[in-house]
Length: 136
Image (cartoon, rainbow, N blue to C red):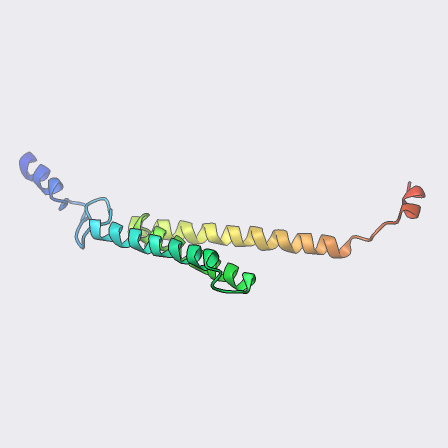
């Protein structure tokens, strides 16, 4: 392939590497439409919790908190898809695998910490002031 033809192929996103197509350029970045969709979803997913809290829509604060946490998880997914461009195909699936690994480590750390703290709390014997005076 001549140098001019090779440069032309890379300029249009068609190169030897097989990138491009479906609204994405050679580096896997999203289209303007994807960014606008992500932005609109993010604004909606921010406005709903604000409205729930400021309008005191749900009387039970625990239910309000659970709904807000659910919407936060949805917003995290929106950001990962529309802004970070994470899916099972990007980077040969390695970004998705790294995400799964990170989530696994966080879950093990959180639940392990809670489990250890619960068992420490349950198994620690209360000590009175009298018993402390006779302790070695």
